[in-house]
Image (cartoon, rainbow, N blue to C red; front, side, top):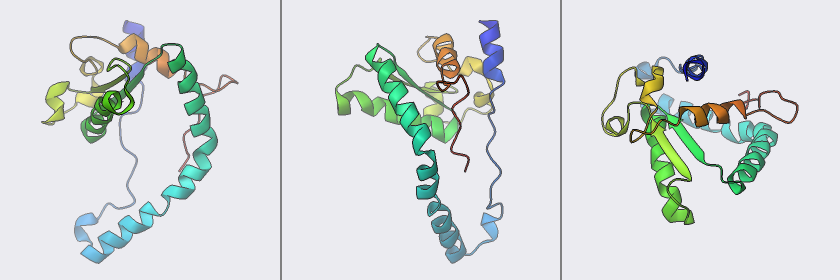
Length: 156
């Protein structure tokens, strides 16, 4: 597993630079206008990403039909939202809870309390004592298109 851990440790874990580094210096109107302006860029970004989203969905559906599972991985707020979404799938869609699994760096404790630096530790991406690392890395390695190239992100 050491090789897999090394591959996972190479994944970027930092956030993108913000266009709004001076929020505390903005008025309420400036904040609201900035949020609205940023939100207005979402439809165009989604539009540009439709081919990648289509490919992703078709790939996931094919793998799920063969018994595959979905893992939500995250740290902090994104990890909490992933765990929340994964927990809603079984009652909403009538599937077993083992089909969609939410993992948060720092474990269940991190759902209610920040676990500092957890996002930088492979060991933190475990749930209920079960190590899903090999399956997760397999999923990351499978995230290539039909030409063997990584599926591009939306490019912003």
